[in-house]
Length: 216
Ligand code: SAM
Image 1 (cartoon, rainbow, N blue to C red):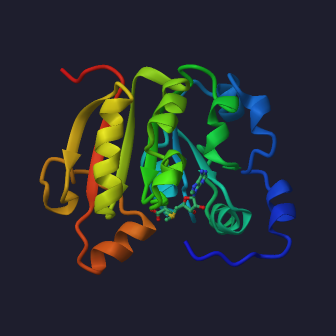
Image 2: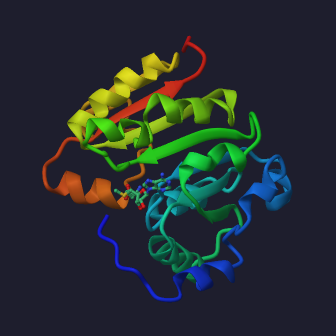
Image 3: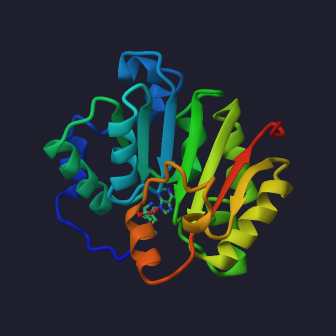
């Protein structure tokens, strides 16, 4: 994602009611943040938040937490939230490496990863959000029957991710190399900003769903 630093974005985020500025304090307390016992689903690397907000609008019985590393990007999502507030959404600016400090064991029901950065150099493999190191972090916060859903148009990253799911001791409950032409898996698909851009260029979209317990 091309980044332009927006002066004052950190301050604007700190003052925003949708943004949780000290998320470590909410570990194990996310039901209190939302004021209900609804399931909590998170998106890591949410960008400007279009996917997360579409899901939140369609599923008011689910709470959504969006995580984004950069203030300048998160600010765009916060501006959308100001225009159209969603009570079941909260946003965090953080690096997902620290996700285990923010959610307690079993606190999260589903994790979405969309068009995650590929980190093409081998020596950076563990920074990829679908590396075995990240799957270990996800295992520490996901419910036992929780899932990770990942979409990308990047062939190398998708192949790597399929291997890492198995290396991490997880299982695949869904996999397609061409989501938009897969009748079963495209049902209910919500497009992300990057998905719209890359599919318009003719790139097939790949998707996997990984789970901790073997699918029946
Ligand atoms: N998910 C959006 C989409 O599909 O349109 C944005 C995709 S963009 C290529 C990847 C986003 O993930 C960027 O906004 C980036 O800042 C964020 N990101 C990358 N690594 C991250 C990390 N370790 N923790 C949190 N966010 C991260």
